[in-house]
Each structure stands twice: as C-alpha cells, then as structure tokens.
Amino acid sequence: MKKITPIIIAIILTLLVLLTACGSNTETPTTSSNNKENKTLKIYTTLFPIEDFTKKIGGEHVEVTNIIPVGADAHSFEPTPKTMVNIAKGDAFIYNGAGMEGYVESITQSLQNEKVVFVEASQGIELIEFNEEHDEHEEENHEEHGEHDMHLWLDPIRAITLADTIKQTLIELKPEAKEDFEENFTRLKQELETLDQEFANMVEEAPNHTFIVSHAAFGYWTDRYDLQQIGISGLSPSNEPSQKQLQEMIEYANEYNIQYVLFEQNVTSKVAKALKNEIGADALQLHDISVLTEEDVKNKEDYFSLMRSNIETLRTALQ
Image 1 (cartoon, rainbow, N blue to C red):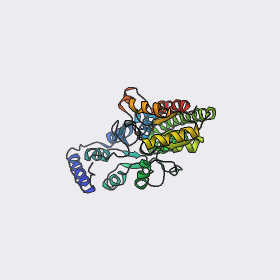
Image 2: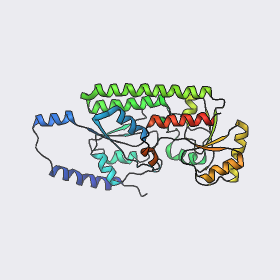
Image 3: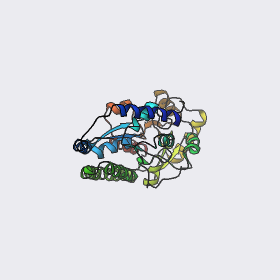
Image 4: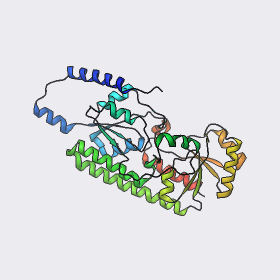
C-alpha cells in the first residue's frame, strides 16, 4: 500500500479545520463547562489489547475505535487519509510502540499541531530482545522493528503496566472521572494477576516446557514462565510444509518429545494432515491477540477469553 505523505495529510487537516470553524456555534461559558464534564472521550487505538483495556478502564466515559480492521495484519497495516483525519478529531491516540507500528512517527509529525494526545502504551515496560530461535520472518522484521520483541501484551504482568499507562491517560483527559477509572483499573489488574497465576500453574503442571510455533511471537511467555519456543522458518498455516521444514520439525520433535505444532491462524486440513502423516504431530492454534478475526468478533472474545484459550492450547501441547 502506498504510504500517505505528511504534506497530503496536512492539506486534508487544514481543510477540516476550516470546515469546522465555519460550522462552529456560540456557547455560553456554563454550557461549555457542562459539555466538558459530560463529554465522552474519543480514543483511537491500534492493537486489540489496547482497545480492550481502554474500554474496560474507561467504561461509559470513552468511545474507543481501533484503527486496524478486523482480520488485518497488524505488522503491515497502513492508515488511510480518512483514518488520519479521524485521529486528529480524537482526544487521544494510544498505540503499543516498541517498534510495532511503523507508521506512528508519520502520524505524530503530521498531527503535531492538533489537540490529540499521543500515548505510547509500552513506555516504562521492560522489553526483551528477540530470541535466537526466531524464524526468517522474524529475522526480516528484526531490521524493520528493532532489537526488541513487541508482543509485550501477551505477558499479563507487563500488561498491568500497559493498562496503568492507559488509566493515567484517561485521568489526565477527564480528571472528574478519576474514581471510576481507578476502580475499573483495579478490577482489571486483579484479573490480570489471576490470569498470570493460572498461566504459571499450567506451566508448573506441564511435563514438557518446549513448543514449536510457526512464528516466534511468544517470547514474553518464555521470559515469564520458563518456556522455550522454537520458530520454524517460513511455516505457513495454509501451505504444506517443505521437506526441509518437515525434517527440521522431525529433529525438534524427537529431541524435545513434541507432538504438536502451533500456528497463529486457522490451519488448513491439508497442512494438519501433512504434519500428522510425516512427523506424527497434530496442529493447534495460538492467538497473538494483536487483531481479532471475524470469528472472534462473532464469539464476543476479549483479551481474557483469548488468553485462557491459549493456556488450554499450551496445556495440550506441553504434555
């Protein structure tokens, strides 16, 4: 997709400001003050965990829009001019950071004169370096995204810090709702701590701590829970694995007694059949939770339901 230049964005935003000025109305100081107190904050986000946490913390005080469409690739997404204009009219734009969204710098430069607040949710979070076992896809993105793993939301404890940053942002934007934000955050924090304990208990009970994945996006689990992920170069959920990939999986499966291969997306039957026939392994699905699928939306999934589904998948895979 052709990237939107800051000049084009600036022209669009200038026209927007002129149109808004022409349609402005006259408000008394009292009316303006009341509107401010009752105002619903317009928050734009990137990844689903940020969207979900913002809704849970903000409650009735926020209207949250995720700029990445359902089913899109979070790594390759680029915002449209319309998206940029919408962000400019918002109160805050909350993004993950840590090299995840390559387009953020362009947005911040283009909208630097607007009132929208830009928030990097990963600020203050200890990032981990890419694991040496990552695949070629990860190697390519290594140069593009930097030295660190950006999938930090998969660690419930780091997710608490991410949620706290969101809470502080909402308090700054609407201090009169601080009590609600604090209460909602406390509830969310407790849920994340419970999730962390559930994850730790599952790992403690598991006889095996190594798993094979099609994309080494789960480094924060290996860091938090003493697991080991092995990324298979170029492994696809829709195309049958090559002989080289099969041989690589056979070697790892024998070495670590692995009976499952984990994919991020839905696995086609031909891939699952090939894995079963060639190495005796079944295919299972893990969710990196960066973007929802249409099925996720239909099933009304949230961060916690998807993470608990991942825990159950790992419980099976680590037997």
